[in-house]
Image (cartoon, rainbow, N blue to C red; front, side, top):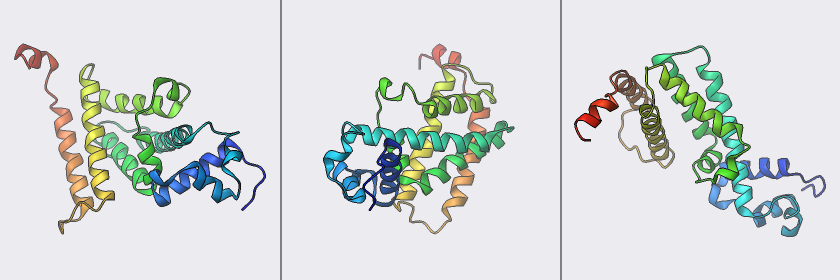
Amino acid sequence: MVRAGLTVARLTDAAAVMADEAGLEKVTVSALARHFGVKDASLYSHVKNLRELRVRIALLGSAEMTERIAAAVAGRAGKDALVAFADAYRAYALAHPGRYAATQMQLAPEEVADSTGFRRSVELTYGMLRGYGLTEPDLTDAGRLLRSTFHGYIHLELSGGFGHSRPVQESWSRGLEALHVLLEQWPSSELSETNGE
C-alpha cells in the first residue's frame, strides 16, 4: 500500500469503500491504517477520531445520494417524482450499504452545518411533497413517513428479510403506488386537531 499522500479525502473515500464492502461497524482507524500500511498515529493528523471518520462517510454518502435523487426527480412532479425519488434512494442504498448506514447515524447540528447534502435532501423531499399540495406540519409528517418506509424496506431487503417468493421489486412498485394514493388523499391537519388527535 502507498504510505505517502494521505489526505482527508483519500481516507474518507477508502473508509467509505470499506464500509460498503465490510459494513460500517468494521470501519476503524486501525483497519484504515492497515489498509494504507501506516501506523494509527499517521491518521490522527487528518482525522480526530473514529467518530469524525464515520461522520465524514455520512457526509459523503449524503452528498452522493442527494445528487442522484436530484438528477432523478428533475423536471418531474406527482407520482413520477415520487417514484424517481424513491428508486434513486433505494438504488443508492443497495449499491452503497455502508455509506447509506452512515447517513442514518444521529448527527449533531455542528457536524452537518457545512453539509449541502443533508440540507439539499430535505429541500428535495419537501419540494417533491409540495407537489401534492402539502404544507407544514404535513410536510414534516409525510417526509418522516416516506423516510421510515423507504428505510424499513431497504433494511429488510439488505438483511434478506423478505422470504416470500413474490419478487421484491414488484412489492416495492406496488408500495410506491400506495404511497402516491396516500399522499394525494393526505388527511387535513386541521381535521385531526378538530377531532382531538
